Amino acid sequence: MDNGEISYRRYIAGDDNGFVEIVRDYKDGLLLYLNGITGNISFAEELMEETFFKLAVKKPVFRGKSSFKTWLYSIGRNAAIDGLRKNSRISFMSINDYTDIADEHDIETEYFKEEQKIMLHKTLHNLKSDYRQVLYLTYFEDFTIDDAAVIMKKNKKQINNLLYRAKQSLKNELEKGGFVYERL
Image (cartoon, rainbow, N blue to C red; front, side, top):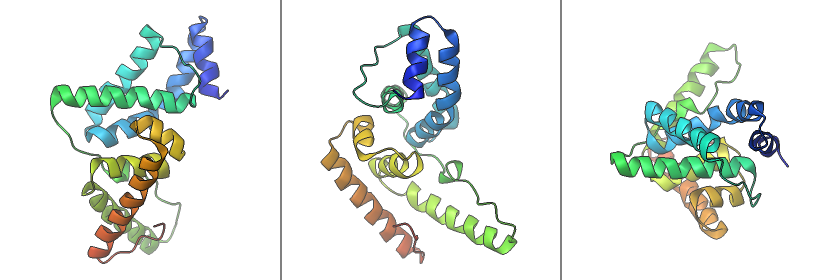
């Protein structure tokens, strides 16, 4: 059992501190993921609150078929899809919100890194929605292929294919701009 599952079981048993721990541990990552789907931080905050509200009020059963984090992100993704259908607006977030700047004291190095991030952000923004999602889940959130498949409601082969195509598309777009990203 992971910490989220333990905290959730404590909350279901009546310990409100378990819910506080869940919110503390998962709110930032969930918010960034939802913002990646919606492209609107305010809307993503509403969806994050809705996700935690569902846990607090409806207390859905966690069956343990995946990790607690995967299960929670799936609930959040479903809320985002429902919210987007209701609001009929789709856009995606800035990659700058996901990444940290390395602790470098060399101003020139920091400048070049920032320029690379801006280029990566602009390029990611031009990719298909599924490509952005799979790249975010696997590279920024470190989800496994299996977990990404559960969250995106696809099978493992589809996620592998999607990830391959997303990396190729990202690489091609970056090269068009005269930039080669080292991790691809």
